[in-house]
Length: 382
Length: 179
Image (cartoon, rainbow over the protein chains, first blue to last red):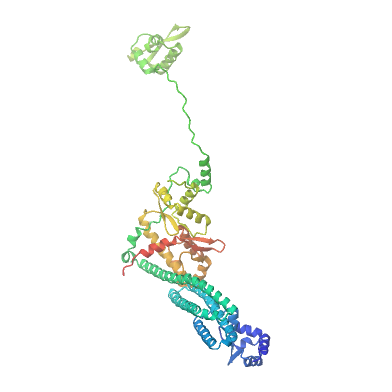
């Protein structure tokens, strides 16, 4: 095959090739690609083995697909088993090299290329495994399917680990021999592979832990969902209390049913307003307890006795007297020390209160330039 | 007590928990997250502190709440409500668990295509609302009010399941069903 013509064809029909590559996961019919090329063009491309024709279906040649996928790293499939084949291939080349040492310039570049491929495959596949595992855990809703997928990736991880260990053993056993050819590029590559191997082994541990954790979580979640479904069925059929220990378990259900109440004389609206707490906080910070000291009180040394005068009592005493009211009052023991103004007040009160029982005479009684009508108790009431 | 507590933080913790809500470590609210971290650092002192006012502080794996054994008669009622809610959410997505994100609009869309889910929503008697959307919102609010979920993005109306949900996982896991 002429490589130049191959590239020319690829370039000339790049739109068609691109379309076929983009839709490589499904069957493409000739009607779909009418706008890109004619039937004769398809025949030319088939002759160059760039496409395959089967009735009205068109397929991009697998080598082109593989080349492009490898180039853009767009292939999602995890290829681990190929590593052992590549290791076997290198072993075979080393055996030839041992017998035909003169061929080292031809064989060593091939060995380097294969070693690089294995290294890149190990790196690429670990990334792909990480993406696949996360995707499976997060996107698959059906638990049985999710568990199956996770178990599959767990086995792929084991396979990967074996491949990594196999490659490690191979390097350890054959690196002295490979180094004996004093090929600097090969030696640098071997150093880099050794470092990468440590990195890959370290990355493999958390990924394996993750997949085990995902499986455990999925199993746990699956059991929990089944339990909720069972509880719901029993609840709806009013059998939950009899067929489970929910009543006893409810004793340990300690979530608060009501909010904590705080006793306060403040109105609820004030207590629940947004500004209440900051205001209270502000005030409480500034507030100081006000304490007043009591003033000194001087107590009188002599006991002061308050005398209460009962008008009724005086009236009773007066009812048995024959003297006039004013004379009686001036002579009354409890009033003897009193000022005339106080006596006259009591005199007036008594006249007003007991007017019906008293007789008021036209005669007057003079006392300290004051004149009082002479009032007597009426004998009819005695 | 040898450490001086931050009065402002302690009162904020109290005012949050006293409503029967949780404080979760994975809350989208920075304030709540900080309060939980403060509470977790001083959990022993705070437990003692709240015990003086007869309140029991419980701290779980990434969450805290005030526990109470009062109102026993209401407990079963609430547990039954929660069974209905969880049953609905697991039908919506079996991935419903701590850290799970969901959108209100996504539930709405799923209900449109899933008659069973629609029926389950209609059968929940403890939620209000006339429309499908308002019913979903009422259901979400029920869990949000208790602090099991929190709004993550108000514009998108996206929610996150908080660490406090582990309380329900532990509780329902402990229930034994007789064969």
